[in-house]
Amino acid sequence: MLEQLLKVNNGILTKEQLTNQVVSYDELGRAEQNIDIKQFNDRLYYVDGYYDHDYLLQLSHPDLVFSRDTAVKYHWLSNQLPYELYVTLPTTYKKTVQSDYSKVNMMYEDLESADIELIETQEGNFVQVTSLERTLYDMMQDKSCPMDIMKEIIWNYHQAPNINKERFIHYFGQWYHLEDSKEAQKLLQQHVSYIDTSFKSWKQVTRLV
Image 1: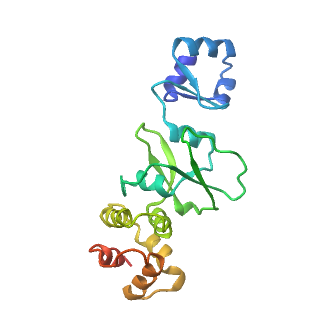
Image 2 (image 1 turned 90 degrees about the vertical axis):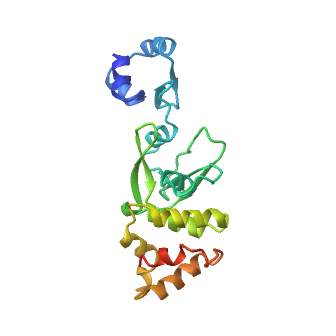
Image 3 (image 1 turned 30 degrees about the horizontal axis):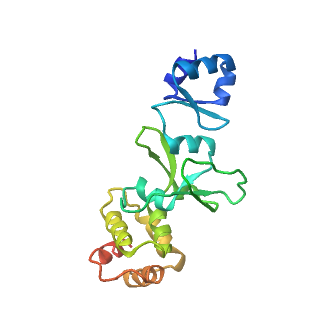
């Protein structure tokens, strides 16, 4: 029974699934010896070789959203960032996020549904990630991001096939009722004044509004 459950669930089982299927701890113990089941935390088990860290973390914390540098990776906006785990959680969230990474950068904000999308991991599971435009906006607010990486992020955003013009306007102009690209560019420069505005893709990006 246990091996069938693992096959159906892509090598991952929750404590609730084990309880609902009346899998005894003796059976689980035997399985750990025979098919190399490992425990991710007190709620999740996985078969060695099916390990998908971000998906397991998502199952452990359903309200968690991968953001900032981690979202940049998921959207393929840059591959230069030194990888650290960045997550956003609701402001009322109290649970501790435990991860294999030495450092988990946690931010607390009540994101809108439009700020979030589902993206497939390399292992074929889906996790919550800040949207393309929200990720761009967050990184533009982060003045610790090196200039060359920020330029790469802007360039790759411009090349992305799934740009959402309405969300771009929402983040960079809608609040101010901007009417033309000059005003939009001025606002963008206020947000990212540390970026060299001579970068050749800059005007291409601002034309989106």
